[in-house]
Image 1 (tube, rainbow, N blue to C red):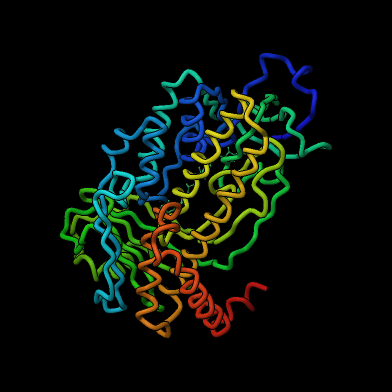
Image 2 (cartoon, protein in one colour):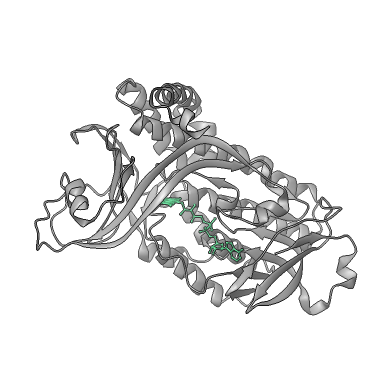
Length: 430
Ligand SMILES: Cc1cc2nc3c(=O)[nH]c(=O)nc-3n(C[C@H](O)[C@H](O)[C@H](O)COP(=O)(O)OP(=O)(O)OC[C@H]3O[C@@H](n4cnc5c(N)ncnc54)[C@H](O)[C@@H]3O)c2cc1C
C-alpha cells in the first residue's frame, strides 16, 4: 500500500475510486470500526489479505465496556449467544493453593457481565456476518496492502491515496480517512511515521486449547499460577473446551505427552482418555506502544497501535475502545463539518489509557513470573487493581484501588528490574 496525502487530490481522483473511509485489515478491530461507522451512515471499504478469519487461539475474555461497544456495533445479541460470564480471577501459588480470589459481577456498571468468555474466531465470524448485511461496508478479501509511504505535505487533512494489489494487479483508492487496523505487523504504522516504544516485556509462551469430556477441575473463572518456574494461566472457554497457557524457557514446544504432564494438576488424562488438542500455538508476548497514532487523516487502531501480553485480557478490548473512540468523531468531522481538532483527541485520550493498561499487564506478568520475593499482600493488591481494569475509564475516577495502582506498578516494575538483572534478560537482549 502506498498511502499518499495530497491536498487537492479530491478534484483529480476518479469518482469511482473515492470512498469516505478505507480500513486496512478485517480483524476484529477493523470490522468493528466499519460497523460503527456504518451505523452512522459512513461508507467504508475494508481491505483484507486473507479470505477467512484468523483461526488460531487468541482472545478469550472481554470486559463489560466491550460488550457495550459490540452492542453499539449491532451485534450485542449475537455475541451474547457465544459468550459465557466468568466468575472472576484466582491467584494460585506453585502448589495450586488459592492465594486470592477476585470475583467479577454478572452485571457490571455497563449492564453486562464484568468478564465474558468467548472464542475469538467465533467473534470474528459474527462480526463479518454483520458486515455482510451492511450496504455501507464493502469488504474486499484477498487484497494485499503492499507498502506504505507518505509524501510531502503528509500532515495535511487532504484525501489519502491507498494502493494495494489484488491478483497481482495494482489498484488505488482515495479516501477522506484511512484506519490502519492491520495488526502487529502494520504497514500503516510506517505511513504514519510511527515507531514502537518498548514497554519492556518479552516472553515465549505456548497457548493450548483442549477439548475433553474428562473431568477438569475448574471454577468458571481465570486462574493465574504464580510459579516462577512454570507460570501458567488456565480457564474454561466452552462446554468441553479449556485454555492453558504456559511460559516456555529454552525448551521446545510441548508435545502431547508433555502437555498431559503440564495439565495434570487440573485433569487426570490417562492414555485412551478423551483428549483433543484443538489448537496449539507459540507466541512471543510483547509490550509495546506506537509513539504516534495519527498523521493527517491516517490513524492507527488495535494491535497496530499497541501490543500487550494477555494476562489481564486487554489487547482486543483496547482495540475495541480505539474503534469506539475514533469512529463517532470521524463521522462528525466527515458528515457534519465538526472541527478537525476533534480528531486530535483520539490519540490524546486513547494513548495514555492503553499505556496504563499495558503497564498494569506487565506488572501482572512480573508478579506471576518474577519470583517469590514479592510480598503477597502487594501482589494481591496489584491483582485487585488489575481485575478492575475493564471499567478503567469510569473506574479511574471513582475507584481508589485503581487510582492507587501506579504505586503497585512501580513496586512490581522494581521487582521486575531486579529479576531481569538476576536472570540477565536485559543483557541477553542488548
Ligand atoms: C494468546 C493470546 C491471547 C489473547 N487473549 C486476549 C484476551 O483474552 N482478551 C483481549 O482483549 N485480547 C487478547 N488477546 C489480544 C487480541 O487477540 C488482539 O489484540 C486482537 O486480535 C487485535 O485485533 P486487531 O484487529 O487489532 O488485529 P488483528 O487481529 O491482527 O487483525 C489484523 C488484520 O489485518 C490484516 N492485514 C495485516 N496486514 C495487511 C495487509 N498488508 N494487507 C491486507 N490486510 C492486512 C490481517 O490479515 C488481519 O486480518 C490475545 C492475544 C493472544 C496472542
